[in-house]
Amino acid sequence: MKSLNNEENVKSRIRSTIWDFLNTNKWKDIDDFSLDLANSLYDTLLQSSLSAENLSRILDKIRTSFFRINKISKKQFANLLISDIGKRLVTIFDEGRARISLTTPEIFPKMNSIEDSCAKKCIEMIQGEEKFLQDSLRSILREEGASPIPQRERDTAQEIADIELFKIKLKDRMFKFAVVVKGYKSVSGKTLTWKDVTHQFVRAYQRGKPDHIILASAKEPADGLITSLEEYAQSVERPGLVIFVPPLDFAKILLAYGYLKGLVKT
Image (cartoon, rainbow, N blue to C red; front, side):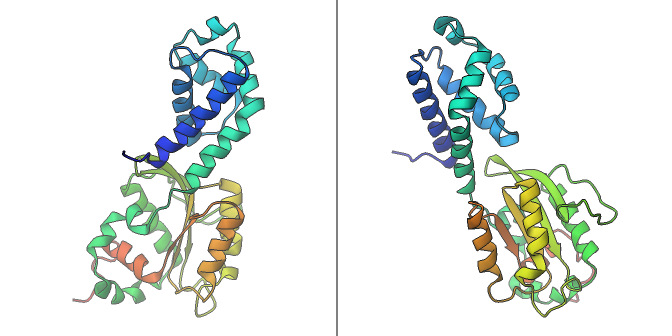
């Protein structure tokens, strides 16, 4: 028997919770109402939060005799669902989302065309201005279908990341990202440390709640950095939150998408 993929498993758990909710209230599940509601709730949670307003929109779109047969209004149903199982539904969705991991090549597929030996020759070429790295990644992400990614002329006190919240479709679902870029000259030490990224990284998560944060660095990570990043991800119950892009992979990405073109000595 074919196993359920992650999306199907989450939808199944949402529907099971709705079934229990209906049974507790002695309501009949008419016209596959629970199935339509589970699917619609999942799609809504991909894009937004669970609220009475969003739930009302969902219920208005479902064609069913559920409310007439069970003698309950849509407003009453929505209020009861939010108060009784709303938090549980969000938890089920968040737990499922947290288990979906991504790799750098899945986000930047063209990088697979670049050999390590070629990228190694170009590592010094990514040690220039941080803004070049930021602007290049913005353009590359747009090429891969990410949106919205507005151009930013300069950093401000209100920023939450170097490339702020955007969405991109991968593995047949939408992911929300933020990107933190650390240029070679912006890091004073020989390697990138947790202290160098703590403020930006934590701010990006706390204010934006992305599915993943891409941390791209022109300097090698210090011992313990990856462990610290993973520990933070565990502390907010988001395993796989960070996708770290070390200098070699950073060079591969820029080469593959043509942003170091003409700089490579052959």
